[in-house]
Image (cartoon, rainbow, N blue to C red; front, side, top):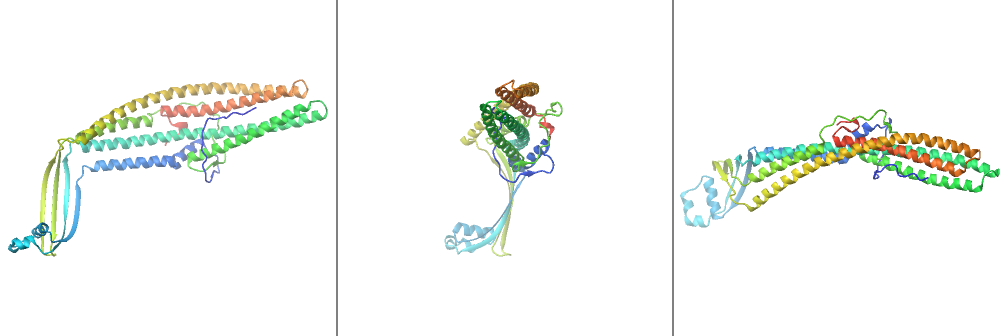
Length: 437
């Protein structure tokens, strides 16, 4: 009578204080708590914020750049010394003396400048970069939405996995009490000489096995509660769980929307195309405007001022690195397109698998309910016949094993029913358990 592992979850232990809720923790509350407090989702939101900042950088490329500069210097380098005097507007005839030109005295100056640079034409790279940034930001938002749904599905698995383990613990305890009662009954009959000593030894062996099963199920309960706490951003969850494992009504399909990961893949493909446009624009000419004003002082009253305005054109007629970047960008466009197609195919496959799994779970659940009734009746009849001495103990133990198997099937089918429903919601884009952000 070995109770097999009831749910196929792999949960890690998390340390910290438990979640001590005064009221039962419902599944909907657990999902919302995971969305708000889980560190993994917080990291995902930080990625969204980073993409938003990148978008602002791209938008700012159209705006003018204002540069302010202040400087102070002292030099006797001949060209700089002559240029400083010229900028200070104090060149005199004596400054053209060859001796003064070749060996000037050290000269000091302080001043500053203000420069405004405005791009006029950049071959479309600014617009392409801005659009690529916006697409990537929207893609990260969609990815975060899908990460929340994936977390919600994991919460469903951990939440109902906890309930499955706790119900299994209740039934193991029932079995332990039943075996103890059987030991007392058979022990009394052995003392009366009505049963063999081997039967009491067999029951003691079964009792030890049940105790081992109980210890294993307790371990599963602790792991499940710890895993649920990990998902919700707390330590191991304590207290009762308020959402029943068995559905109170038929599980209806939610209103489906397009999955976040599919939206993200489509937006990433669009961003890649804009990136290729920006790479292409790097091979086109650029035109910019520059306005500036400067001043250089010898003293507060002895100074020179000047301004300038310029329009310039720059064109990389040939640039091997930029051409290589263009080829890379085009390859990324193809990769993003193929990944988008694969994501769509993968989603369709996941929908088919989830639908088939849900139908199978529903059939198993219906069969398990009938098996429970049959196993309980069989055990009752065999135990009654055993008490009359008409049935051997092995038949009663077989009936108990059959009842345990039926109970395991019921728990597994209920767990599959809830988790496969969540898997179908995730695959179709419907809110999991009806919970929306």
